[in-house]
Image (cartoon, rainbow, N blue to C red; front, side, top):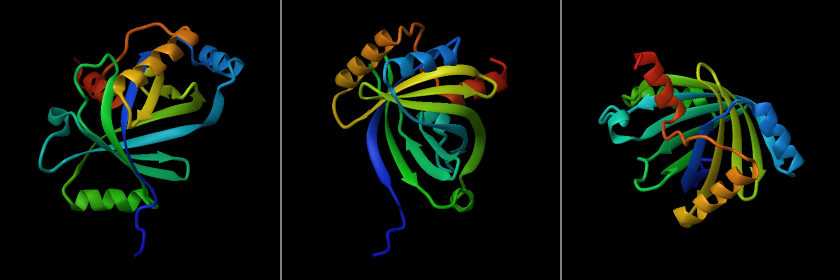
Length: 188
């Protein structure tokens, strides 16, 4: 059987996002503490809405991410209640042609809603993935993420330990970059 999908993963994503003043200071701390640099680059996330339900109402997301030569389609389920971090199911599919995938979505009735563009540096540190993001029209953020099939509590413990080690303070931002951009565009 021909394998049409290169990679499919379904995990629980536990993530904390915090607005920061200086990505450069965090980069230096991460390097000094022995974090593994995983790469950097410009990412463009193209979001779509369903023809049968409004993802803004159901708290879901469907995006096509362009990152250099790599293209990935991602479905994000509704945020799970009762956690200080954002926890949700995430399904990722590597696709060979983002343009063809987007054409297929449009033919199926999906509507392109917005684009989020950012410069991202990624690191692995103490069993977490850390993204240092400079998001167009929003500013600088750190995301600390754990992808797990285990418990939310265990993942949150890892995230809190990393925040402590990196001396990161500030409120967790539950809204995605997409939600923040849409709010900014609406003027509310």
